[in-house]
Image (cartoon, rainbow, N blue to C red; front, top):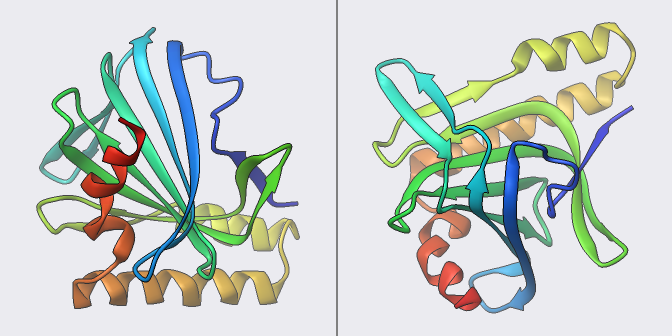
Length: 176
């Protein structure tokens, strides 16, 4: 069974006070939902270490903007620090994107790709994808689909154009 992740981050106890906003955008460059989750007050900050880079993604004044593109099988969460600068782009590889009660969601396929402003690309949770196949939570088709989509995202990153990254700061201004 795929895990459904909602854009409004419901039930996230780490965040004490937040704001949530969403828009549907259709332009020549991007088509899909964009959401903004602001973290006014957090119980505890959240930091990840990727090799020699330490990246804080949750703290007071931070925000997560999530893109749910209409025609792709990933969602991109851009983590902004308190100065409004992107610190991480997190790609959830998914089987589908939809809405429930007006809130965008994705059906997560376990494996993720992180892209840092330094240009570093990290693939996460491949072991979870393997385990999901072994435990029959997904079938071979889902497994291969996740692997292929992950490679397509990495290729797009190497080619240097993913609209959700290039438009991140511009799209954040839509919520001002």
